Length: 427
Ligand code: SAJ
Image (cartoon, rainbow, N blue to C red):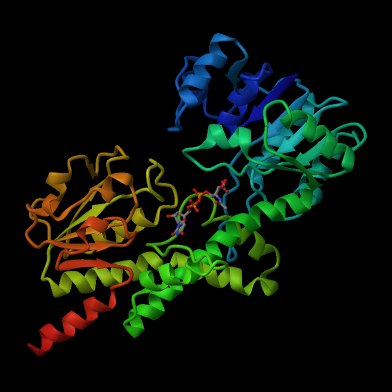
């Protein structure tokens, strides 16, 4: 089977290579000429464990090549970005998907299948993509097949999850679903679940919205508990001992290209019916501000000047800083001229990021932990001997070996910042 994959990013590239390494003839298309050149000379442009070796294999077997121009094929898989529109409700921008599909249309033939993997607002396949495809005169479900098959893989585990996760195959008609199943059965070992396009779209969005809403609940608990002088982290671990409770973990906000984006796609389609989803987005997107406020209060209390920010990525053990609340917090603190702010992240290479931990902590007054990188689990009080004031604000509850330090704060003990300030004022 010849397969064209449109968009060679975090999902499109591994998907294309996976088909190529399962004996399919794959052409990967991208608008970025540099990416095409690098891939054809054997270099991947994203960090994903195991992917380089998979590309090497596909290039050796000559089953994968990258290019700029779409060619006729049996199946076309669209895996391009779907950002938020710059409107009040941050609706779904289908521009890249529509442009990718438009580029397929001139080579589309009877019997072909088009699969949309990009995350899209509910009803997009039927209301926007179907009319585009049928503008060619070909009938969907009879002449050609149209499917929405959302990706659900976790960065860092993409290769394993591509093979073993279940896939929702949402056809516009039952014949479309069958055509989609045939394609993914090439390498997917998880269940191929038959569904309709709109159900598949909404299901993908709700998976991430479920997580976003639950994280918002944990973050709201932090706000409430800080006010009432209760340890929110203790509450979460107690409550989670109940067999049917699974409170999520609070943090400095929700980042990445999924949880911080997808809920808006639903809310924008049904604003009057999506109060909880919108409220959760508000709670999570204002967490960086809340952390900045607490950091400023703590710096005020300890009369500090230098802050060492530990971690800039949107979550632990990855190099991705897209939609990262940690980066937002770093920039906000840095913009306040009263502090000397240094960023340290062992996973990210950038000119403004310090690579040496001791340099970052030298003469610092506060270590502000914003990401749960594995490296930070090993931190002990001894790592901070070169600080001017040994204080930590650990927003990810990760530096657990440091909890005995006098000036250790986490999201369960924020009320201590206020209490101590009051004491020092009285004194
Ligand atoms: N986070 C918390 N508290 C938690 C869990 C996560 O604050 O208890 C934060 C993280 O620090 C991060 C954000 O949420 O900033 C998102 O992290 P994540 O690990 O929940 O999700 P992503 O965005 O890396 O990947 C998600 C996954 N979806 C689900 O687990 C339901 C993945 O399977 C999807 O493929 C991906 O979104 C996507 O592409 O949609």
